[in-house]
Length: 454
Image (cartoon, rainbow, N blue to C red; front, side):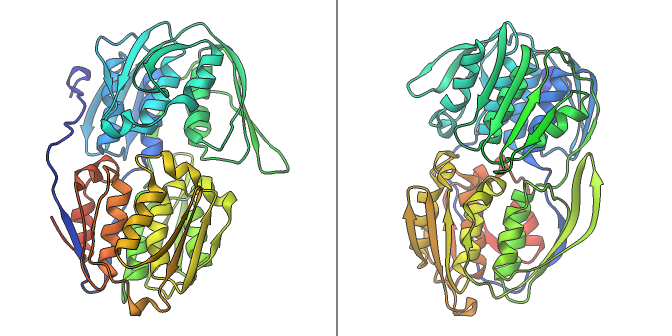
């Protein structure tokens, strides 16, 4: 596949129901799809670099394919050479695209690409699907504007948006709230800003951008303060050189089969090659606090990241109060944590999770609605969710609902996992969007013994 042949995937039409119901124990070993965050960054940095970048284990979900198509539109050579294997021939920068950049449902993709594009003297128009067009971009646009970028967009900083970049100046930007996407957008813009860029974050967020910038040859300086915050400084005048990138298994995707094993009696499931970045293991820490039987083996380094094999066994869980400061390390995993909490003894309290309201959907509201429809006690707050679990997991969750996903892949997968251990089947509408982050989810879960009908 040549650069010209890299096209964004079709959105798909129509609504198809998917239903999960209780069956026997889940057994087996699997490898989670490549980490989505690292996959996006590998493509973008490869396009910004000089020379060839070879990627193994790239997540080939719709979101990442949109980013691949965008990098081709900005002038990089992008070629798929095998399953999960891609080559990016970077030219050291972006050229002005001749057409609109359609990022589909990829919130991470569009925010990081806008940051990277802002550093070049070009104009680019971005759009996405209905969900992405409804998500505000102001948190990224604010620092980019302070650096000198301009744009035209819909009210509230929403797509479609036309960005004009070039001639950026240095910024020292303090994040109003923890956000790896905003931090990364500023750092990518800083690559081509006079004097580079600095970012101060109140809480440490996932650091894949910093790690990968170093792998591509950039100098990135990080200092930590006593309150848990960090300052990241990217000096100006740097260029990147293409490298080989090995993408580890995505912990956000691995969470679904692991939690399925924890709540389904008799189950034992192992996920091989799972990313164990210290800023991405909040869910494992929380499940451990709940009494989950989890074992971590074969710890090793791959591509500058720690990976390991993680085994989950059916466990009688107990409710806990999740420390709010843990939120940045597991923000995408709160929906599936809500499912684990439904089968725990006592309440699980999740606070400091307001970021969930501006993801692909309002995930606090949708999880509260879906769990409640399945007979689970929930209490929703502006930035919190409390799930009151059953006294004993084998007393069961009723289930029996059809859940509206509002185009959110994690809402869909979470409720399907719920259905595997509920007394009555659980259905979700429009499951096609699962492919945005977890292509092969249905086949993988069926291979473990799950009963999911499409």
